[in-house]
Length: 480
Image 1 (cartoon, rainbow, N blue to C red):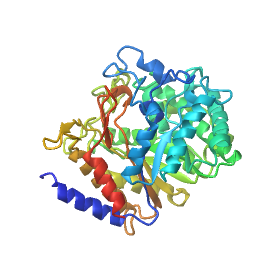
Image 2 (image 1 turned 60 degrees about the vertical axis):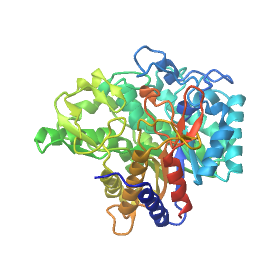
Image 3 (image 1 turned 30 degrees about the vertical axis):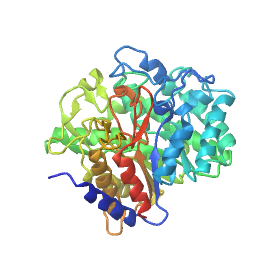
Image 4 (image 1 turned 180 degrees about the vertical axis):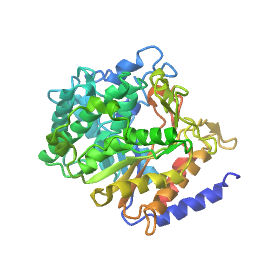
């Protein structure tokens, strides 16, 4: 099928804008570690990711986030990009080690000042905020990280201080971003910081992350924050590679491991039933107290859904790969991630299958029904090998990223169809959509090799160049 023409893409932008419900929030998202840089300024402490990037072979291109996109020094420029984009809201994260270098104690004033400056600029630009308290940058001083129950309490203390300091300035609060990714890639497979390879013995980290979420919800509300409080989970519909009994069984196992173990306790107040035959794999969770589950399962004001692609599972050890790179730990498992040759793929090799976005929403609606609060799509986007070109007539920098436009258009369309009247997930109250990401950035274990941004960043001099997708999203916003 030929790619859409520029005019067809513009027409689709106008159509999508006209279909957005009244009050629907359009936004763009980033995270602190991926964009801020200035890792040694203002008394900022070391995070587990700072330590991880210095270990040989951990980051694909050998880079660090010491400068990232230099957002710390370019807040004015980046908020101006948000303003001219014409969207409603900016999702960012607070850098825990910039505010609490040791993971405990009083907030460091230099960090507070930086975020006050950011919020001042957002207010002046007429943008609301969705602030994430934890987007993976655990203070390295917290011994044991999320494998230690005490980290959940330290996070709750941090949340209360942040609620007291910023409670009247933040539109919405997300406690934790993607506890599934932190657990599976950071503590089970060793692909992300802190690089542990505990496999199923990593599950206590999952429980402590969810416990930290629950304590943080209480702490924020006790601090009297005016904005709504929620969590951000990543969901990926899981399908078996074949109808073979083993493929079906392992697909069910992975669905529990990736999706349900992180959503069920939050929304239903209990962990999911382990598929028959796999009970021993989950013994590391041990006996979970009723008190813990009540804390984790408090009612929320919203539920954040990150969606990128579906997952196909096949029995047997396969290629040692995860979405972010190679892992010998993954190869030791009795199942593997299977390919999707029938779909085009992103720069990361993820299948571009927007219909599964509708499936993810349908699964949420079916599994959680009336207990599911309003939903925001808090991340959706794709990496492609974008390159700067120069207009021969004007010499202006340009980035033509039609593939990203097509990805965003097809996925926003799928979400709107699924949640409209008569859609498979029509019961979901979908409140907004945030594109990942505003800027090309430090993409975790992939370093600077993957570009997700609406704005191209030259990592040598930090020049920002809005891509065609930036102008496309602006047209969506203008067409409401």
